[in-house]
Image (cartoon, rainbow, N blue to C red; front, side, top):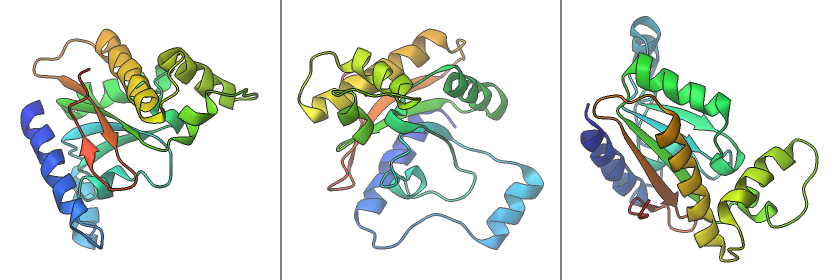
Amino acid sequence: MSADEALERLKTGNLKYLDSNTACGNISSERRKHTCENGQNPFAVVVACSDSRVIPEYIFSVGIGRLFVIRVAGNVIDNHQMGSIEYAVEHLGCKLVVVLGHTMCGAVGAASGKSSGYVKFITDEIRQAVGDEIDPVKASILNVRQSVCKIRQNIVEVDGLRVEGALYHTDSGKVEFDLDI
C-alpha cells in the first residue's frame, strides 16, 4: 500500500471512530489465527504517546495486525523508537510513519516543570522541542514536529516513504493531519 493510500485509510478510519460508540476493527479469533500463521501486515507505523486515552487502533478503526504501533510517553524519539520504525519500514514494508501527538498531554505539560529520574529523559527531549511555548496545543504540535524531523533525518531513504505528524484531540476524538510540518 502506498503512503497516500495508507494516510487516506487512517483518515477514513478516524471518521468511523468519530461516529462510533464501540471499537471498530477485526479482532476476531480468525484474524488472530491468520496473523499468527501468516505474520503481520501493517499498512502504517504510528508513534504515539503512552497516554491511556490515545489508542491508535481505536482512533483509526483498525484491527489486529494493521498498525505497527510504538508507544512512549510524549511520543519522543530515541534509538529504540528509531530502530522499531526502521524495522517496520524495511522488514514489514510500511510506507507511512505517523507521529501522533495529542492534546492534554501530561508529558508535554511536565516538561514545563522540574523532572527527575528516568522521566527527565523524556521531559528534557520535549523541553528542547517546545522551547518557551506556553500554549499546550502549540507545544504538543512542536513536540510532534521535532519527532517527525528526527525520523526524516535518520531513516534510510525508502522509495515512497512518507513521514507525517498528526494531533489527536482528546475531547473530540478527531485527528488533525495538516500540521504544516
